[in-house]
Length: 75
Image 1: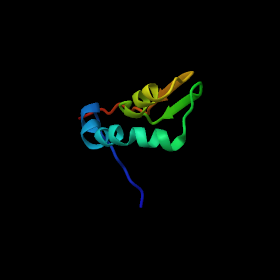
Image 2: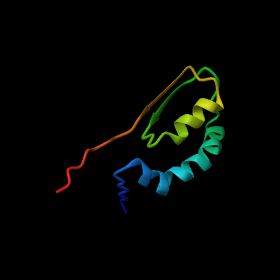
Image 3: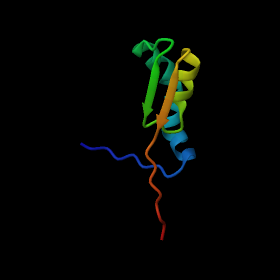
Image 4: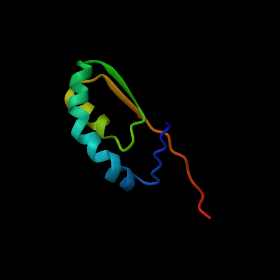
């Protein structure tokens, strides 16, 4: 079954998903064994919880983070 999760502002995302991202970020980073000097691409970074945790976890050479944003017109 496909899932569609659509939130139209950062506050809505933070309420539903961001709080879990912050809680799980360090465990995920430990699991991936990120090392100093690596370059990281965070695709689908949302509000950046994992991105900011990565910056604190290791002395990385570079972190690039991108997220898809679609402007919605309301009628």
